Amino acid sequence: MGHSDAPTAAGAAAAYSWVPQTPAANDPVAPTPHRLEASTARTSMASVGGTKSATSAVGKSTVWVKRAAIATAALVVLAGATILILHAAKVSLPFWPINKDEAGGVPTSTALPTGTSSSTADSTSTSTSTTVAPPSPTPIMPSSKGVYFGAHVWGDGADWFPPSPSDFNSKLGITASGFSAFVYVDPNSGLRDPDAILKHAEQVRAAKATFMMLTVEPSPGGLDMMTDSVNDKIAELLQSVNTKYGLPLFVRFAHEMNGIWYPWSQQPDKYRSTWIRFAKAVRAKAPSTTLVWAPNAPLGYPWSGSFGAKPGSADYRAMDTNGDGTVNALDDPFQPFYPGSDWVDWIGVSAFWYGNTWGNNELPTSEMADNFLFNRQGSIVAFANKYNKPFGVFEGGASYYPKGNTPAGTKSAVAAQLRKRQVASNDTAPGKPSSTKSTSTKSDSSKPTPPIVGERPGEPTKPATPTPTPTADPAPAPANVPASAIDAAIKRAWLKLLLDTAQRARSKLALLMWFEVLKTEEGGLVRDFALTRDGDVAARIKGDLGSYALALGGS
Image (cartoon, rainbow, N blue to C red; front, side, top):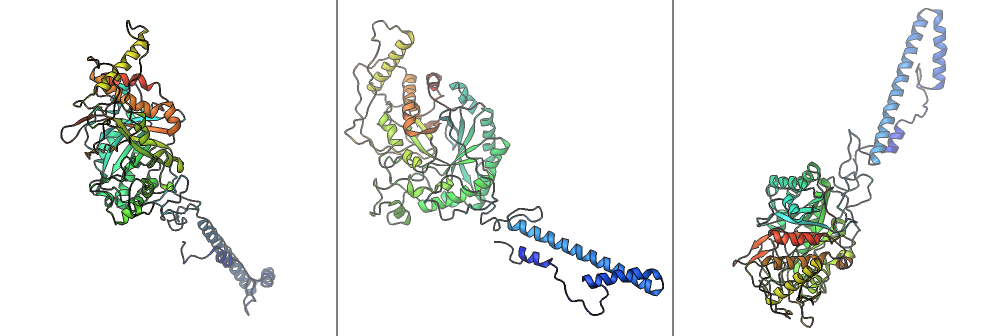
């Protein structure tokens, strides 16, 4: 839409086109060839002298004045026509910038989307046919070197263990790819305590990370908190991180939206429209920010709870993807919440190991890792492949229970691992076999894997009571297996199930952000996810990291 009262380019051209006119009677300087010749003749006769000469001089002066006026007018009209033509071509001029309507329908606060166009994109998606647009987003791309590996180390009021990103690096002997924080939305400042967020950015930069990540939680007010004003303030803060600290950002907005434990849960239509408005604001001001859409793995979907969709509601009907009137394991756990590929840069998931029995220290199984990545009810890996999006575990970890129970089978399995490593490192073990049969716990494939609700920072959850998994215990449990060895074995196993070469070939995993926290739940249950809290655990983890293809920071 242009200025309705502005002349057209064709009209401007017509305005300075000269068409000869019949001279008016007794007009001594009418601009026709004949009158000009007569004027010249009179001028030549003026040299004879007398009153006639003076009159001729005045006439000559008048002719040149009018000639100059006509030429000036023509130049002005020509310049005006040129300006109109340039403006019609959407060229922004210093004195006449292109506004949002004249830019082909793309608001100045909206960057053009990236990614493959999707049929699920919201109807509010904007046109991309213009020649002039706001800065294009430049999302973080997967690395050819391997998996980005970093950690959540700050925010959300949780008891994070490492005092700084640099401390995490020091204990593991690496330069992590990135560090993450959980941050709450604030109606006044956009995000709560923006100064603390910028201070965290300073620490992340000092740790030589490749990127910084924020999990943006619209809490306690839910999606209604995301007004245009709040979106703009958040975008301005993200821009500061991008420009002032030179840090590209991952932003995981309103994650695990398909669950029932957050105030933004299970509101598919409102969620999609809110996401798109948020994405527009971010891309307009902070194009070096990568938007991550990260649902929860459907282990127990659709669950039930206070934030769940109510039967009969519009949200419930939207989640009933097969139209049978009931939302259950037969429905798609992801599609109703997907805002469209134009507005998503990466797809992620949360992947946690808690043990098959709540409070028991048990080694993770490959079946459980597959349940997060390749769940039959809905594979997040397949979903990311469907939309050609990079995939990452944007929140993951394995829990050790310092006050929990360690079954004899776990102790035996860890003891066997220790003996095997000792033989491999010393090449001598008097009275011991050179190899030990693995006694890792393994799920009974004849029984369905019980649903386990994932960890929700700041939102204690109580999963359905799972059935204990039988574990092999071929030998008496060694009495001298240290707790740190069991702690390390649980976390090392989960890391391997996500990062080893064979698994990555299947999942195309491009990022893993570890949940580096010691968390006390209601009732006193303590869950330790940290890799660096215990020095012995950190040393054992450190020895493994070199065997994985990781795209670490430091550049």
